[in-house]
Amino acid sequence: MTVRGAADQKEILIFERRESGVRSYCRRFDCVLDTAEGSVVRDVSGREYLDFVAGAGSLNYGHNDPDMRAALIAHLEHGGMSHSLDLSSTAKSAFLTAFESLLLLPRGFDYRVQFTGPTGANAVEAALKLARKVTGRSNVIAFTNGFHGMSQGALAATGNRHHRIGPQMPLPGVTRMPYDGYQGEGVDTADLLARMLCDPSSGLDAPAAILLETVQGEGGLNVASPGWLARIAELARSSGALLVVDDVQAGCGRTGTFFSFEPFGIVPDLVVLSKSISGYGLPMALLLIRPEHDVWLPGEHNGTFRGNVHAFVTATVALTKFWADSGFAGDVARRGELLARRLAGVANVVPGATVKGRGMMRGVDVGSGALAASITRRCFVEGLMLETSGPHGEVVKVLAPLTTPDDMLNDGLDILLDAARDVTAESGVSGASGLVNA
Ligand SMILES: *Cc1c(COP(=O)(O)O)cnc(C)c1O
Image (cartoon, rainbow, N blue to C red; front, side, top):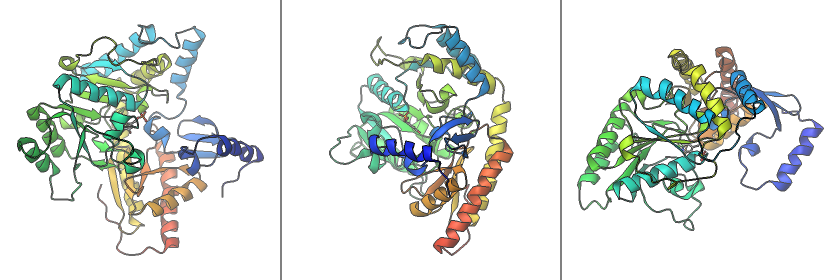
């Protein structure tokens, strides 16, 4: 069991007494964290945990990367700007130069970069607002189990009922369509969208945007197939809608390439990035805009914290350190295969379980939220932090930092395997052996 020191216990009381009921992760992981390095976090009593939550995908390069930290300290000691609205700064110039030369030019992408407020949700808001301005239309097509953030426009495009709260929160302007695989194997959900878009009495208003994740991070690690993505991209083009890829969680290398859509030959009109873009867990969000759509008037989507200067500094190091050549992407792809193999082993000990996801964004659907919660609780006791996703929290999700050394990844997956086996045995679930569907 978790052994907590007296200091730990006392500190937990202040959170329970004073912090809002909205707090969530800290309910599942009741420790008081102090320091962190790479894929390991340490609590106030000195206990270490493998962190395979990684800031929900905000720490793709792990905690406290030494080169990012050194650059940040140097910036602070130099008296570098810490806040600058959207004024030009040396730090922003270095970031944009690295973004252009290391990410855009080698991929043949031509995007303008908009610095929005520092959350993924704000960048999604900017994307939807811009798509509506460009097209003069209001309807946005989003997909079942999609997750796009908590502000009103982004929430309208988010499926999860718990986050939408209820009828007292009007969330207009979005039509939900079934994501790839939603109706099971053998049904191509793009057929329904195609049919509804060309039927003038389908009741579907012409869309300003089609908004999607290529892998649904919160929605249960559902993976869109290359064929489905290509069809959706073509439907966006033929219907005059902007294709918006929300790469907040699946981007920044999580699926093996910097942008999650790179392997599929689609070029979205707008791309949303946040979470790991700073590389250091600092708040920052971007909207990438194809130049012909960059119709913003000055300040039309503004914000006090557009472009976090400290995040520019660490993001520049992240790009030059990890994305100057294809070595890191190759590492992530290889480690993603290791993860898939190990998770197939986990799925084998849970009757009916399946492996889901792509790259280093994978998990095991254990079929029940209660079982997934028991497994992740057991993992935590054994020193591994993991979260769950999916409509019922039924997917045990592994978001280890992409830089996690293989032995550490294996250590964590050993803990997960034991926990899955023990919890399944204790809960008396039995039946067919696990189906693997990576
Ligand atoms: C986390 C997330 C968001 C929202 O980002 P915030 O910074 O929490 O506002 C949007 N889209 C996806 C796919 C996400 O995973």
